[in-house]
Image (cartoon, rainbow over all chains, first blue to last red):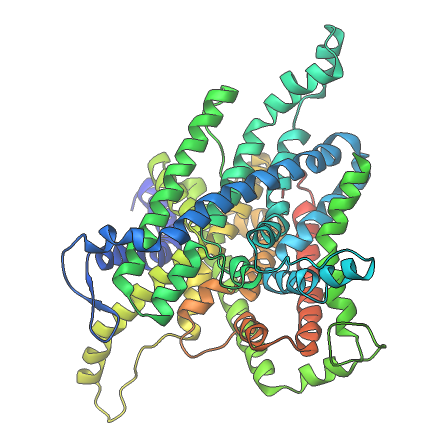
Length: 286
Length: 271
């Protein structure tokens, strides 16, 4: 065997396990839900083969879930962005380099610890014995927080904030400080330096964070379930209901396909927008 | 701005602090702190259902993260040698594995596996010589496989970043000194990428251990810890959950810190 052929064989063998995995548990399942979405619900639940677009025509039956998701997910991602930016800016520009590592690690830790348990703590904080009781103690009228869109929004911001801070932090940290000095030397005020240099150059990081958080939020299930109390439900809740309770797999598959299509369209739109705004050609997803 | 940043850190850690605080509460209710006690830890540790779910989670997380570390490292090295077209295909698929919402991954895997089992099980039953043919079903295998997908993508990404930062000169020096490719890998490349592999393993483990939604779909009759905790929350909160929550948080924090330390070693600016 020639050495080039041998090299190719070794490369193929190295890639094979991951390729098998990707094929069996990503490509094949995707094809399966596309096929299922064209089928019908079997009388006892599950799937019966058919070739119809009826499931897609039926999507408006879950309009509330789509509506909630498509309003609250972008709103949550935007709120994350607005809160994350100053934090990322402070970490990248205002802190001493030797303290930065620890402060960034402190941001990462909550993201990698159980979202379920952290969200459950918010059930207590927002619930009757939490903030409403504290407010009552200082003489304010009783207010309801839990099981409202606001509670879901808060949970979203809480859960996904670290994922927004990191990419913005990275883009700000890589920023060439000499550009800021140059801008000041040329007579720009700190205010206009921020808007025409810093903000512009951190745009790719902002867009990466925004797209990533938005895409993940589209499939969110736990936060609307725990903090929305079944009143504020997302597409993820509709999917769990259709697959695990009413066992309408074809309709559920159609919704899942629609969700992926929406996610892809939003990602493409975000990429194009970033490209136009920053002049850069592409945005890394991670 | 400093005050705002401090407030955000407070916001991030408030729920964690509350869970830990109430895990030591002596009282039955989460409403007020009535004294310090370890009783809920004792109850949690002697709850057999809880311990079974914990064991399941540990088995699933260790296996899927281990497989992901192997496949992901192999893929990262392979992609370094592959042509641009192969690389583009893998990049797209790994990107999809990371970006597609877990709920869709869970559903798609469930649908595909149930269909596959429906085809394979009758064949197995017909071919099996004995009376009790093996039946493929959802369980450990399906959770491990579904978690491994995301984790392999994660490990590949981390190891590739490390390989990219690796100096070529040592590798060239090694082959100039007549070391075979395998010896060069073992003595030069592996020691340098090992921290990244370990970091990838730990992050994959944490992800798998914490994942609820994917497991919820593909677990079959198995229960993992997040599924158990979710079910308990729906039944009504007990302080036991705070104890197990505090333990899980502590374990994830240790793992994440370990992963970060490993990632930062000789590799600045990565997250």
